Length: 431
Ligand code: MEV
Image 1 (cartoon, protein in one colour):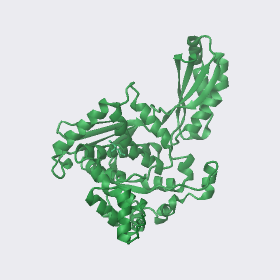
Image 2 (tube, protein in one colour):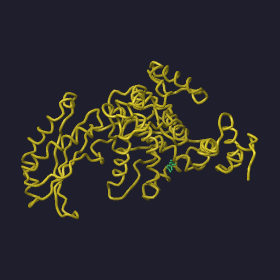
Image 3 (cartoon, protein in one colour):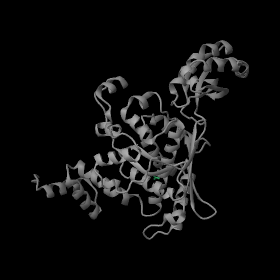
Image 4 (cartoon, helix red, strand yellow):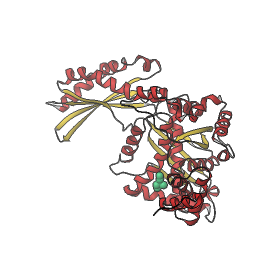
C-alpha cells in the first residue's frame, strides 16, 4: 500500500527522493531512473513523434505529496515550470486529508465525434432520416475498432442537431457518442466519423464536410469534492473561520466575474495540466474542454465551488471534462509518462481522471487560501527569487544566497540579482 506522506522529502537529494518514492510505492528504483535523464525520451523516439525534430524539451518533475483520493494514498507526478504549484497542492492535500481526502467520480468515458452535413435542401427531413437509420449507423461505427470493442468500448448513441443560424445558412451536425474506455479517444472517434461519412451522405443526399471529435467532452466528466475541517484552516494570525470565509468570498468573485473566473480556472489548470503533461496526455485538449465547459451556460464562470457545510467546515467541489487516457499516444511511448502511471498505480483512465480532478481542486484551494489571506507574492517570492538568481548567473550555493537577500530586501528583480552575483563573486563591474 502506497503512503503519500513522506516527511522531510524536501530536504533529501533528488537521488534520495527517487529512492524514497520507489520505497513508498513499492516500485523498483529503476523505474524512476528515467527522471534522472530528462524523462528518458531519446532523440530517436522524439524523431518519430514530431516532424523536424531537433531534440527534446525538459520540464521539472515534482511530486505532489499527501494526496488521498477515494481513501487511497497516491503520489502525484507533476510536470510544471512554475514555482509554488507542487508545494501548494501538497499542502492543501494535507489539509484535505484531515477531512477524509478527496472523493472523486467519473462518468463513462464517452467522447463526442462531430459530423457536419451541408448542402441539404430540407434539414428536418434529413435529421429524421438519420434517426431512422440510427441503428445501422451505430452498428457500423461500433465495428470499426475491434480492440476497443474487446475492452468494452464502442459506439453508444447518435444525436442529430440542426444549426440554422450560421454564416453559410443551415446544416446538420451529427454527434456520435463513443465509449473509448482507457484511451483518450481522438483516433478512435475521428476514424469512426470518417468511416460513417459515405453512409451519412447516401441517407441525407447532403455533403459531409468536417469529421472530428469535440473537445467539449461534456459526456466525459470528472468530479471531486473535499471537506476541510475549519480548525485546520487557521494559520499565523488568521482564524479558521476567517480563512474559510475568505475562500468563499474569493470563489464568489470568480463565480460572478469572467475576468476573475479566467484566473481562478487558470489556477485549477496549474494542477490539472501538470499531471496531464506528466502522464503524456494532450493538455491542449483538456484546456479547451475546461474553458468551453466553464462557459456552457453562455457566461464564463468558475469550474469549482467553495461553501461551508452544516458544521461550518469548508467544502470544495470541482467538475470538468477530463479526456485523458492511459493507452496509446505519448502515454505509451514516453518513458516518463509510463513511469508516472506506474507511480500512481492507476489501472484505468477513470482512476487517472479522478486523481487529476483532485489535484485541480487542491491547487485551486492553494491559490484562494493565499489570495484570501497574505496574498500570493509571499509564497511565490522565495521560489521565484531562486529562478531570478539563476537567470542572473548564480549557481551552486550562490543561488540560495542571492535569492535570500532579494527576499529580505523585498526586491526580486533581475538587475538586483545581477548586482548581488557581482558583489558575492567579486566580479569586476565594467561601466
Ligand atoms: C497563478 O499561476 C495562479 C493564480 O493566479 C490562480 C488564482 O488567482 O486563483 C494564483
